[in-house]
Length: 328
Image: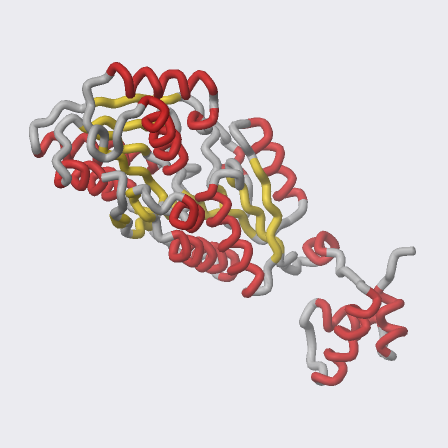
């Protein structure tokens, strides 16, 4: 049998109106009364109806998080930090794993809007979702252009691409390749390729760009075959992979091909998550400030929720850095 507000009132020895005022933080109540109501709610495991509160004009204290997949160590760590930081500020999170599926992302976005969440952090990479321009909710984007009115937070992708290429050059590399995505989405992560290209221009070096269509390219069999062909046939002495999982795959393929790293091929990845630093510490990578990114995303979304008319910048970039190790 479902526990009702009147059950809490009876248990706490107060009126139903007092319980409602405690839940909605409304009116003047003694701390003793507030504590009694909270104790009764905990003992009865009573859960206030967030949707009902939203219909009364109250915040639901719910946040939607839309990301491609938490199986990727970068998104997994970022989502973990976001959830923790929101919880510390009194919000609970609803995680929506959109994978590489536009329809799924649209369905989740509509579900979050229907359930009156207070705001959304969106970091998926599906194309052509016009609902972001139409949903009347506070939204902050991670590393993705959603709509002109939605601010973007991310690491400095151009700086990361430039630094990665510059570092490989400083270690003696001259034939520097890059493994990157299709860059079809209007995403700031495309700037990693721009940084790579601009550094090569300063040294009059030839670019070697290898694009892979799928977001999860590092996991598919066909992509592994193509990567192996690149390592066997292309005239390169170094590779910049725009994510760490692909860099690890390249490393493993080099082991299989008996191609020595870094003597025959220098290798650098991108992201520098806790998982990579703990389980693959030999990888040189571009480290993103994941904790700072999460903190900024949380602060900006809460600003949008609390002060909807406050003007925010269109984009926020945090600096990245080279985490040097054995693969270069």
